[in-house]
Image (cartoon, rainbow, N blue to C red; front, side, top):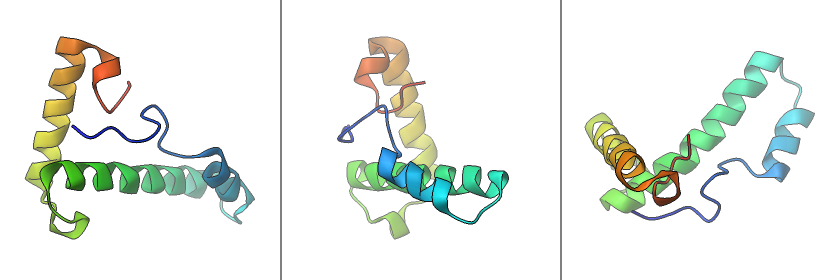
Length: 84
C-alpha cells in the first residue's frame, strides 16, 4: 500500500487554518475538514488500486479499507495508512 507523506495527518496545519478562517459554522467547518481529508484518502486509494479517483467504485473503497484494517490488526497501526 502506498503511504501518504504524513500518514497520521490528512489535513495540514495550513489547511486547517484556512478552514478556521472561512466564514462557516462549526458543523460546516467539521464537514469541510472531513471532506478535504476524505479527498486525500480517496487519492491514496485510487493510486493503490490503479485507477483515477473518478473511476473508484464504492466496492473498491470498501475492499481497500478492509485491507488496511487487516494490515492494522495483523501488523500494527504503523503498517497501515489509517492510524486509528
